[in-house]
Length: 412
Image (tube, rainbow, N blue to C red; front, side, top):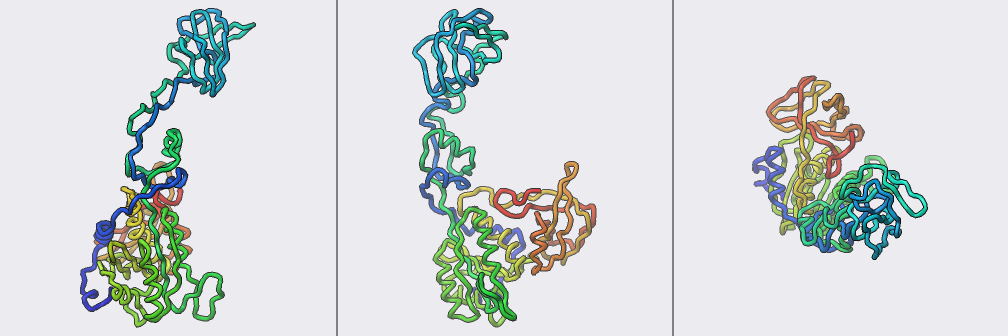
């Protein structure tokens, strides 16, 4: 991914870069998994109801199965039906059958009177209120009819869909496969988690934040390890990483003497789609493809790494796993203090967001240096400031999106 032509490539705008990435990735193949494993995944099959739901007409209350026309009369109680049971007896004129919630309603019954609206005495019962035909009865098939398509391919499986699938006895479900993501950090200054860093060394934290973000999306991360600042080490780690569905690297993508990522990836057949983006933080980012597999070379500064993952890699992973909504929606928030940026590039500003009287208010989360992880921790949203301006005043509306996860991020 590194040659003289690379430096002459057009540098895409923020939105253009994301569009290019999304157009470069395809949905992964389907797989069959156990029902609970499908939660949070995207269906890859149509589900047709094999039977009615409810399967049979049943009582919605504990009470008495009656005929509405017998309202007010003294009725003889002829049987009792518990949940899970049924009766061969028929509700006829002048009779009632005691019934529990969920039990199949007996023939002849057109209403259920709750216990609290009836008075029972010595084998008889009298209703005390108005009885309407059909009251407190769940009719067979009134929720879903046999043969009806209840779920289509492309739908996100949530606990609600799990309930429907379980109701139809679906022990296994076909969903889009989870993306396998390899993560490679680079640099001689890094030590593995669990080691004590010496002078001039730091713990490899980027690999873990990226792995956590990958996992939060429902993909499967693998931390390959640290590629040291030599060609041989880069070849070893990047070759292993390219066996996954997606490769994400951290650092080593700039123009320093020991920035080998693009050079080695190009040697391994990764085609550079673009290098650099008109965005801050995250300008020094590269995106490439090999055999349809995306490669994200993210910057090494912690905040740049996390935000470029959020804005570029996360949407691609979501699309690969079948999601149709891949980019977080922007919405307006009112700045509580002014912000300045460099004109000509989109700025991603970490902000604290609150909702007051139906309006979202945004404060800067603190110093915006790309090495300040605390500011990242203190933020719950990102303000996306357009490239054509350099100053935004307090009281002005800006566009923001929530941080973290696939479905909207941190709660306010």
